[in-house]
Length: 441
Image 1 (cartoon, rainbow, N blue to C red):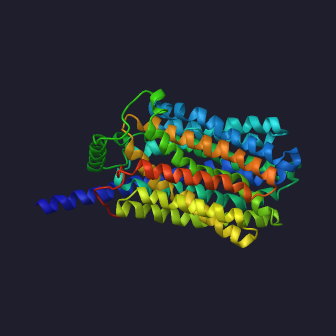
Image 2: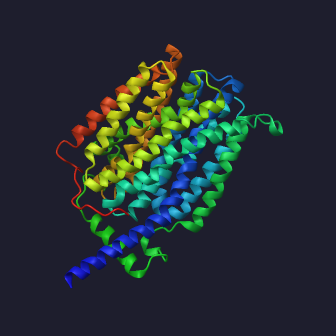
């Protein structure tokens, strides 16, 4: 009888997790895919836009980085608002507003308007990623979280894999309707986001308690499983927001996350120009720019699943960071196209494989009461330093040296600091081992 009970519980668990995953993850992946297409399409647009507007590398880098400044300022308030109003309404609000702002970037006519719209785009999108992480913590038990987060976040490299060729094609619409290609790019990539934001109101369910699409026994199992996890002791308990910004665990996690954020954000903005510097056409640049993201899309899912399977977070986070550093160093020393693309593959594989194990580790260190503000704080600081600062640093070094490759050196140094920080933070085995291994969903 006892064995039968265990089998029944295991069957309920598998059935429940499968239903939750198929209901939420594909839809959220498409949402995140559009988020990164709208955030990163400025890199492809720059191949025409910078010349049209007379923007230097320094001006373009500064304007691109303003996205991360407003993102930082609005990230925590946005996540707290989602906790108050619910994911269904708040994620819809985020997507509708960022889609409108993204499409409005077609109206840019000088550096000032470029600055304003990039700042507004960051404010509009702020809270989406940590909001989804918070939302998934309401639905996904910790032992499944690395693979689920990695699967969800495959939308990031997939956005560039899909978006780069599409953006290159849209740039070919140059002159249609009296508009430049980059005008069409922003318009036609912003409108679908607005439509998907409206769809959030019909697809998302705030909490398991409200999930009419789960059977009663599935709903009870999920609620009980998550309630048990929330009672476990955490490294970061509830505290005022001002203290959270000073908490050493939160700050160290933010510094660690900055490494991958800087690599992904900087290459998202500058990689098309780096590749085009080898004498490629716009279409060749778009197709070649997609290759590193295609490789990263596959390997990040494998790495997140492996982290869950062996129940380990620390080294599954460190190894991708080391790959980022080695790839950046090798790229900065390379002067040929093929090895440069190979090393860019290594950097982006590291940057995206890092995410599943890292965010599972971070979520496990935060108490239930601190997780909303804590995740938002980590992500906000990482985006400010990794995107806002390092995207600018790349532009400054490139303008000073004339080399797109040498401008990657500061990122390599940042990676070394981040690896050291994580090793020290987890030196006593914090968040190192999960006690339970689970079956593949």
